[in-house]
Length: 155
Image (tube, rainbow, N blue to C red):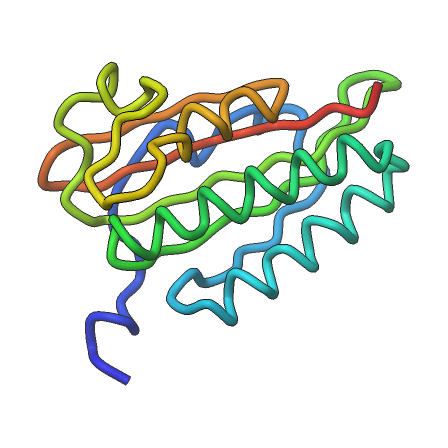
């Protein structure tokens, strides 16, 4: 394995603390390969089932997680994801923060538009993921990296 795949993410972002006041647990997983995406999907599904998210909401969250993980690997050169258990009063949720220290996104507004792609896909990754979750935030700095935070709340 190359040294580039073994480095720790150094990108410092406010999103690492995203909704930290509601966090009851955090698991950090690497995102470097397709196997890591499969493992993340399994962890996300387990957390979603654990708080009794509906099957539709489980599918939405796992789909968003998969897309954002693949973006982290493909465009960010790999990174990590923080999987959070969240509690807000009686409300429970699953939070994910994807972080890489890749090239960053030079134009966030453009990148969040349906149909925009730099990789030959459909251009629905970021915008589609945003529609699948209840909360979405992104921080990207050219030359430093990108972080994307999402939350799905149990209804």
